[in-house]
Image (cartoon, rainbow over all chains, first blue to last red; front, side, top):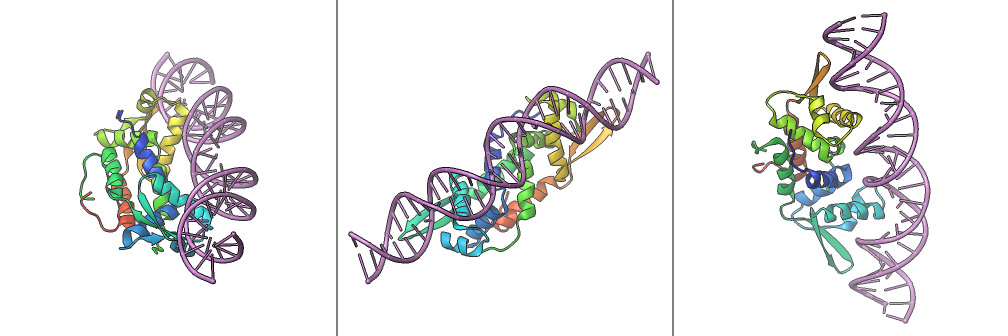
Length: 99
Length: 99
DNA sequence: TCAATATATTGACATCCTTCGATGCAATGA
DNA sequence: TCATTGCATCGAAGGATGTCAATATATTGA
């Protein structure tokens, strides 16, 4: 029986276990530049406070960073975001295969 | 803006986004043999119905299989469980790096 | 058929999560 | 200073989730 503590890993996974938050991460990962909050509110079927909530969950998990520039706030993938998530899977399933 | 539908991927992640379910997966992944339900109930600070509930979540997500042998039920990692999870990360973050 | 054991299911409760309207705050421009 | 715009926060409603006691189901053995 494995006794390692997976509390932090579970919290990180919970932070991304939502279709809209996965969409946000994929968008940030695919875009060379930062993405404005308004881009999300325009493109997603969610009201602005809900978009703000999902972005906050990702930010508080350390998966994104944000910068205000004028009236706009731009979000970016945090460095190592993908690696931190892969590390959780690696800790659960043993050393990495090829993906 | 990425428009891919991440509903299934989010559901899969949600199925594992719990410390006890990660412990269960890690145990199944580490053990060469199957693991009896009673092993989980003995080793985890959860009552038997709660263990059964978590095992059901993993089973209904297709991440585990189970076999009854006599009075006991033995759980195993489902084939491709890890690959399915890695594929979600790959779909979100782009093609795989090395893990 | 009956008792005992292992597991699953049900029902209930508390807590957390998602969503939204209303409101607040920050920055810009007139 | 004031109106406007972009974003964050608050508070509330409804649904989902984790947990457990009680109960049901299945298998074994007597």
